[in-house]
Length: 166
Image (cartoon, helix red, strand yellow):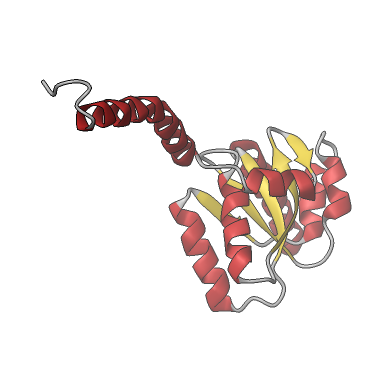
């Protein structure tokens, strides 16, 4: 077996491992980005426990060809990068979406979420979901609202001398 073929087999195994270990994978276009911009994207992604890789579409298609994810192959056209999220389902989509706001060359195409193929619309929906921390902040704010309203009401009653301050 030639050395090149062995390298491709190793790379296909690597892709399979990354897909199986990750919570989600997002495919995006990147053509037109400079090397510095790609490095900035990788650095930003690393802080969110997301790994950005560039693979040949042919190798990714080979890695998923005999799986339930084979329908993803239809969307793999042109120069793509692959974002693997290891901590949660939304980080990869969110990182690429936020980066895409500043750099129009990055467009979300499709992906894998919960071991199912997700189309562009589903990936965009996931990218706009709040993170876990943002969701907790929203919950805490909504739980505080009634208590805050009671405090404001009591303060108004004290100011109007309808009740005495303790």
